[in-house]
Length: 538
Image (cartoon, rainbow, N blue to C red; front, side, top):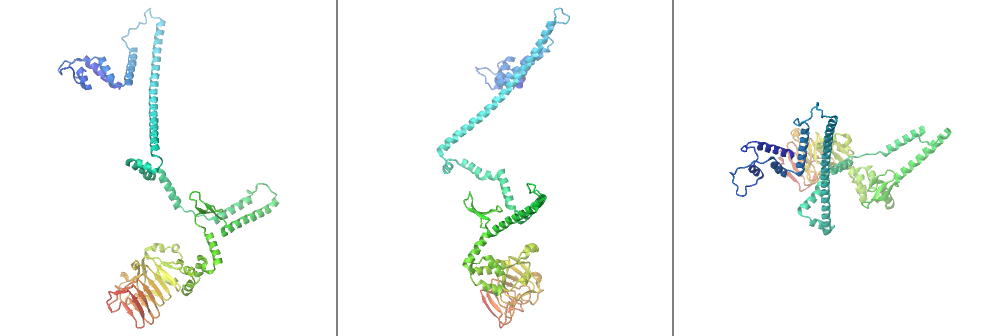
């Protein structure tokens, strides 16, 4: 700006004072080279160049600068000249001893100096106001320009909307691929990466994971105690009654409180505290508890029980509530009483075979869970031996996927029992047996693999994997018996009427001095799709 112009002018003035042959002087040819102006009129490059004056250089540079910068430079130069003139010693002043000097001259000189200083201050203020006005005008121009751009965009969008209409399909068809991509980003991507989305998602996760259990009875008890203390302290009394009337008022209050509590309990037992309302958004009915303020979609349990009781009173024993039938069946022995009751009708059979009667055994892979007694639950056991010890005739023992260890001497089954594993793939349920399984009664086995563990190899000598004795009958489906690494028969049926019906069974690993399958003369067994292989004996 002005500093650049002043620098150029000083250089030009310096160059004019020096010899025309100096390299730093400004001449017509040099300025033409600076401004990129070629020689015209057949001027020769070797023509003698004349030096430019200070005014010519200044006017030329002013043409290159902004008008505001030129005016600022000129005012600054003028101020500098005025300030230098005040301290210029070359100006002749009258001496103090001169008779022509008067007091009026000195006063006039002071007035001139004060006047000049005031003019300078006014000029500075005016320059500042001009600068502020330019800035404000520039901001107003920018804001006005932005408003005009917004109005043009709104006008353009209105025209486009009037042509296309409000149909979403037409709007999508009128957009080009780049606009469609931008719209997709705004609708499908940006909302899921905004701070609002993450905040709402965090609140939803906290509300879902947070389960608050409210004990209404405990809250009611605390409320009664607090009211009793307030009543004894006199805080519940708005007046000052006669002390002789206080016992009567306490009695009336207690009786009214008991009546209200009895009505609440009655509504809870009869289901009268549940009413049906319609959701405003989905227009679907839901159930609302007028006492607790709870709202649920499913029908409350108390209403289901009441409906089941009404149906049982009208339909008789065949449509008794399932929960009631299960409670009755739990008092019966599984075999034969519960089996006989299950033959009454379909409803009774469903109750007799309820899953709550099945005994579950945890595999060793879930040992950490099985070690906690509180997490075992009803009819859950750590080992197969524990489940057999707690079983009653006709019970069912279910084995989940995993491994089960049975220590020496093994297992003894002397009651009717069912052992269920994985009927599709018995290799998922593996029993590592040390000793043997002695079966003395009837039963059923399905989807189980029984084999010798490596650490037991050579220890349990002369022991069979499964031994069915006199009177014992075991029906079997899709099981594997592997006696490799141990001595003795794989399966043996000894005694009168021992045996069973076997289907899709695999027997292997019999010792060379024993057998894979040993049948006594009085034993009877039926085999279908079974496999007996890799036995060294007969």
